[in-house]
Length: 333
Image (cartoon, rainbow, N blue to C red; front, top):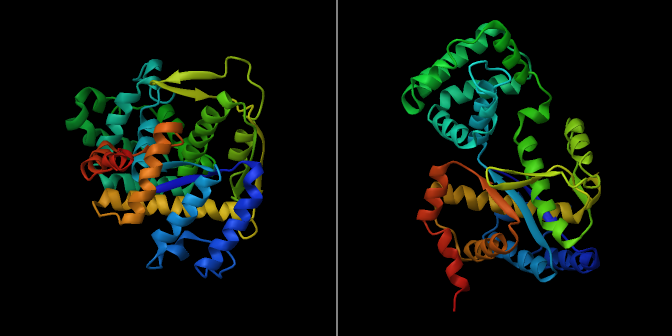
């Protein structure tokens, strides 16, 4: 599981929260130079401590924003976008680009072949363009995989790729690092969630992000979104609103987490959420403090849609089956 997120903090409450963080550290004797979830999670009272600081943040009008992603599912989606892109695959019509439900089903099918996905992942991590023969071999293996789940017609779309198409697909593997990692997906999803919250409220913000190396182009693209709306900067895709500009953001700066307490609070948030969703996926029971925080997160999702998940159907069904939806019950009379 991969989680990317942080806190939206009113500027008027920053000093109060800094004082609260100092008191929190003293209360739980957290003497390390930097607050880290990994440090808190090792304690017997780790979830209780997180619940404490989480409720303090909510009491100071801070709102958590985050994206939860299943790395294997994102990897499967990347494989689908590589081999079933009309720009590369002449067997596909242009309108297949917006066939989101079909592509999601293909990604679900790709998850059934972890060894094949692992090969695809290794090629992505290498960061070099493979030869056409290597791409063709992988395409044929994916074709055999989807023969049963999606039918022979879709499988045939991967069995007759010419040299030009194979070369074009190969360039995906040599793309900039941000296009080959989960961060490239989560960053824009997170920006969109923020804009959907901020724009109707007329709120302006500064984003402080933990320093990330080798992602200059991604950051450049994100900063390019910080411009005035021309009135045509949104579109509904598969029932969801997407923005392409963010007039609500004044700036994005990179900070050193050791010197930025609010980045440390972001680390606590994403670490906790990653732990909880990993437990839910495995069918493990949450303790009382974890369930209490999750109850708040459910209500925040309902009220503000401040977070979202990008996981396989089976994971969503499993989470629902072990009571994720029932967390709302603690708010009933």
